[in-house]
Length: 638
Image (cartoon, rainbow, N blue to C red; front, side, top):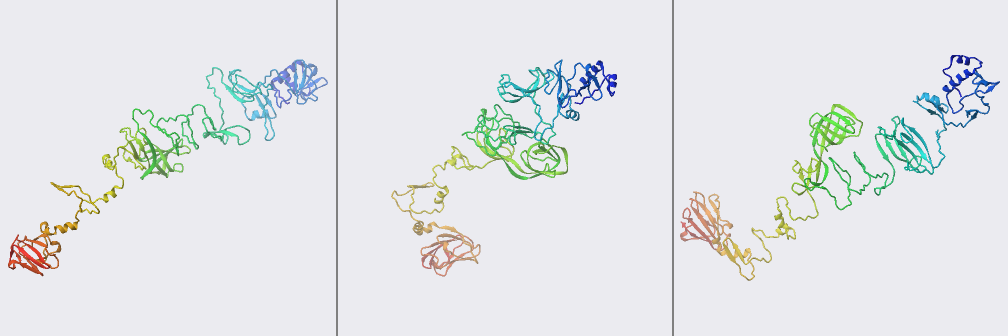
């Protein structure tokens, strides 16, 4: 192998530069020392590429020659020893391709063609050994360490500056076929491992760090098991994205599934679960803003308990839902934008009057911020935030300005037991998200409608109808209105069939006792016929109107007292024929100062042929004595 001599005695260097020179023993010692300190080892071959000896002279290269008798020991022949190493046992030198060293101290070892050049081109730092190999396609280069003892392990160990055999090291190895060590009981036969032990008494963290750089296109840490072919990846860690486990093992209990954990699990962010969740223990939710979101919640147990340890009765107990209700558009001007950790913050030029949960439409800002979002927080009167997955955006002015418009507002509805009065209430349209109590006096909050198939209550108030009034319905067996419609009205009732009345009837201060025997009540016609002869006793008063100083009696005027007045002008009252039945009586009274004359186209009879009322307030009666025959009696004048 080639080697380079660097610093020499000047005289020795001059001799070596001569075409042919014999070296003294002192020169040889200088040369030996120089070779020992400057030799480079490459390709794992000869320490000295001696040319052999001829005529008693050992040749180091083509120019430098040393007499063989001046060497400490003569060198064995190089013939048939190409690629071997010259070794000595202290007295005899020999060539071998399997050298054995009890100890060997070298500054740097270079093994393989190109190892030295790789060390230089790669600018390696403090490399003790550099191995370089060019292998076949899809093959590999290896640094092989083998332990033939089945009960032991084979290890590659790196030590810290103060590491010892007991601590301060990192160890990668594999156990043998019968390995069994209580100290390293975590491993069994034929287990591979990486162990790390920090130095005893260290102030360092003692972490085992597995990391990738950022030069690759993905820089993942990939965990695979069960083979080396594709498709055996079990877990991947993607930088700043996720830890992804993909093992299609169903979970049927707390000890089965792709990931099982003995102990607690802490999650500071959101959880999204696509499959079913089965929990054997108790779920406890606490802290401000704790939220459980699910598309559907199914509870196997027959009870859902809320308000545990609410013995003081200071919180409302409720089931509450969230929804959005349309509102008149609330538009504001956006003049600043920012985005940090997937949360967008917009600033408006004036107070926006928005609330957390409002549905806001952003336009005119830019492609990152525009869209429809749910406001998650309102830090100030002129700022609001919403979730937006995108790269961070440094706070910057929006020019030209954009627009934020709220068209829908988040509302809450539910059923709650109000701790203040113990009443269970169904409510709607609350705009403030309830925490421990519901503000039933909040503006806009209203009691919600409810529809049930049946309702049983010991006390019930509906609107202005009291519980006592509702109690009156007890015993009703059919539609109330239908029953009312079947009842006779108090005014002008009509009865059919048999009517049962009480034995006594009281009207005012009069009490009438009916016969004890069952009888048929008279009809209206019967009563009319019965009282017809007494019609004059049942007369009513009417005031007819004169036309052209005359008035003709009407059929409806029978059995009436007619108050006749034509003012101060005389008037005539005509009695028509064919209008009144025999026995009809009409009473006439002159109430005006104008004299009233009675006339008829039929037969009109009067004592002394007197047919005029005898002045104001004079009265007379007309009696129908025969068909179209009328008798006039009273205070009359001719």
